[in-house]
Length: 190
Image (cartoon, rainbow, N blue to C red; front, side, top):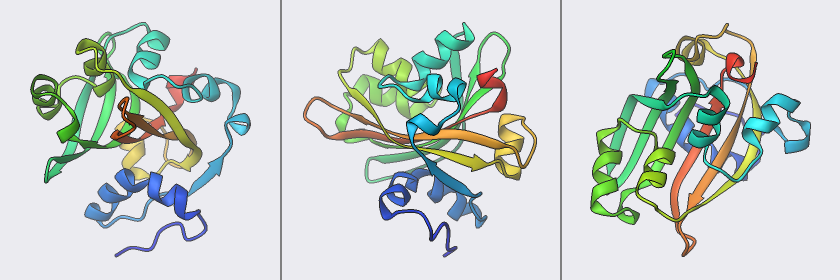
């Protein structure tokens, strides 16, 4: 097992588990991550990250475009689905988010679950389409040094600082629908 980020709090490490999972499977060290408060995020990044909405609708509005996902990897085990994805605009086919997400499929009805498993539409869009009640709650914000993997996926230079958040979507009973690590490319904030 690769040792990563011993300096991060156990709480933040737990929020980063979806991302860590995919880095572990690739046997690649995760890039340097620095925890941030919402107030310490640069202004443009704070607008896109510090809110209680899903990122799909936020990024659709920001880019004035529908979004689709490209599923890069997926692993399913006992009705728990982990995906590594890129959200892209339909208008320009540009990446606007890199994400790692873990979802408890038991908490979704059959129709939406089927679409989640197909991996064509972003989760936020499906929640809206199927009128699923949920709460979105950012748990942590961070700065991440862009490594070779993220650079190639988001089409940004290796070594630049990017910003992201760890987000939790819960149902009205308080059960976690999804744990999400969301990282924005540089062009998403221009």
